[in-house]
Figure (spheres, rainbow, N blue to C red):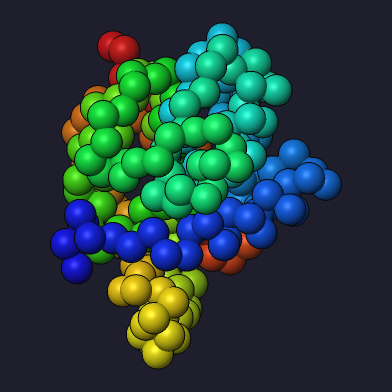
Length: 206
């Protein structure tokens, strides 16, 4: 599936669910809470944040609460954006504002290829680049690939609703090599909830 044809079918529904969860806590998903904590340690105070795949904006808004100077958000789901006051846009193609901190939280797995998304978002990143994506190696990598295969079968069976949407497990070593080539160094890495690989990078200033 060409990247320009990635469907936005499901994001509004998922964002609405996350927004309901976020009313009772700072962020909707556990992995988002951990990512926010790591970014806070890296330094959010006074920085601008770009949240690509922002949903209804729980991570971005929480970043403001942790001292970020400003936030921008992009999401494929128009309904999610309507609830969050952000901008509808494909992070792999949209004109993104230059930001100190760029976050791809549970976004890479929605793209058949991560290259255009990485190229566009790395071009906007000033100091910090962070992402969460499905673990791709070992037993959990195998689990994630089987889970995605089964999920994609379900999406195919309900083609009218999901309109070609699929999820993907990408080679995270190749993604890291691309990020490092753009001038960023690894600063934090965690595996969370047996599914998610969390990575934070800082620009090499030497």
